[in-house]
Image (cartoon, rainbow, N blue to C red):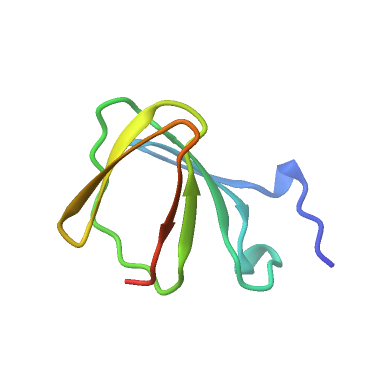
Length: 85
């Protein structure tokens, strides 16, 4: 078992917001990564490709997520599963 303390989190600050790594394989997780993303209003993120399924949960605010040319409007309380791309 691995215990990640709050002090073990990595924070990456970009013009779009702050990404905090709460768990990842490089921090002792078996294979899952958990991030907290505090995005700035109006931000447009770069295109990403993922080698594993993702599960996103919006705690606050709203966003538009585009996947495969389809746009999905999400808001607080939305849970979204993104397949491997």
